[in-house]
Length: 424
Image (cartoon, rainbow, N blue to C red):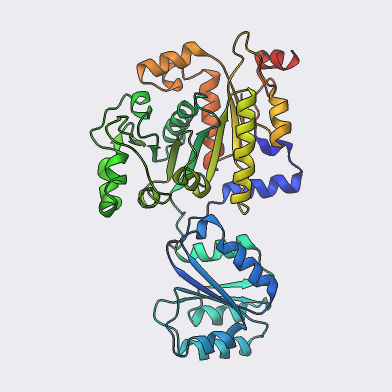
């Protein structure tokens, strides 16, 4: 059954975690950003924002001096895509400085002002002069990320392309099965247009699980980087249901699948621009591109079985991702294949203690229904829509898409079976 990790956090931490999961900040495109700061605190916040995954493609440059330094810098130089200006001035002082800077600004340059004056009249004057955003000092890292990324999102439109990466802590733990069932539930139960991207090119099982055999797939895109755009990627998608599409792996061994760290970036960008939800089925391997796929995802689910190797690997993944994604909410994990007869298992409580977080789901070992679904090319909910595991996938879909907080199931957090296992 499922439980949310937020239930175990202090109230103030849980609130921040919910806000972080519910608020989806779309990444910024490849742009140049130059900031002119008055204080080292603001400079540090912008420097930290430049290291955030959502500004991974942006080039950020910081110098001190505020508006005066910006005017001097652009007297004979072209302006970047975004200028961030911190000012200690008030009212007319800010406006006069911006008027002077406007003489040197190129068309299309966006200006963000960071000031200390909380005044509606000033804000209206700034907007009238073409300022894109006004932020009150002091600013935090996530404030800067939100402001810059918001400049490149359509007004009054929800950002599209929420990427959910699912990866196994060890091979054979059922991460692909979990990913495919979550994506299917996102599409059917939430009526959200979704695409499953099978990144295990030589051995991917998404085509088998959805009973699809598309002639084209992700290999056609990754080996033709010059052709990638939204129309090309859309032609490669195989329709599984009304709201679910598949970008299938070739699952052949005719060639070696060696890629650089940025090989899949353009494919993900194309999917983000058209699909509200992208589920990445990430294979259990550690390469530059798998690292990049995990770090750049909006939500991460690690699937682990209850043994020592899975615990060690999950711990390593947690530690790495928390360090690489300091401004994001923490990754989630679920325990799969729990309760194998006669197999010694590590208790969920011990997993939680080692990872300093509760599992968002505990999925029992039920070979009959999972085997039947796999052999028939079906999802668990198609085999038995009322099955408790199907309900688990529905709640995981809600949690990972930020649609709602997972509900506590009736009868306690764990099934009677799992309660007995934990007592043992």
